[in-house]
Length: 208
Image (cartoon, rainbow, N blue to C red; front, side, top):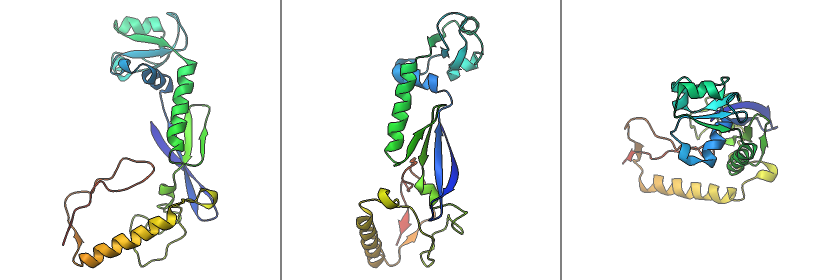
């Protein structure tokens, strides 16, 4: 699955639209329905029969020479243990629905494109847009920055925004007050969580 982005203007700066693209959706839909085939040489064809054209294949099948565009018979001649399945429209629709559910869990606006792409708004990327913010990767609390979309916008504003701001003020203030000599430790590169929704550190090494 790949993620790309474009920009549009919200009136408060640029907003990014993320695009999740599954390159072999027929294959991924099949593996989702039949997880026991994961790790096996698999090919998905457009229909049943030896002359059916291969639409997608697993990495193991690809390494054996199986490729998109050849017939099922040609693919089987290259790999005796190849598992061939015809394209299943219900499986593809189910996989697309699962992608939409996952996207809706962290974006209020989601659209499904005909090719199996899911588009969603990535507000986290918006706040680090170099077209809207000077030096977006630096944190400078003394500089008043342009309006951000961390808590959403208009009808999609976060209900816990004021609580989150209060928690941040209390937590940071308490830590700085309790540990006035607090400083970062230089222990390798920081590790971030694998999340499209909430960017954050897995851990932060400090000393005082």
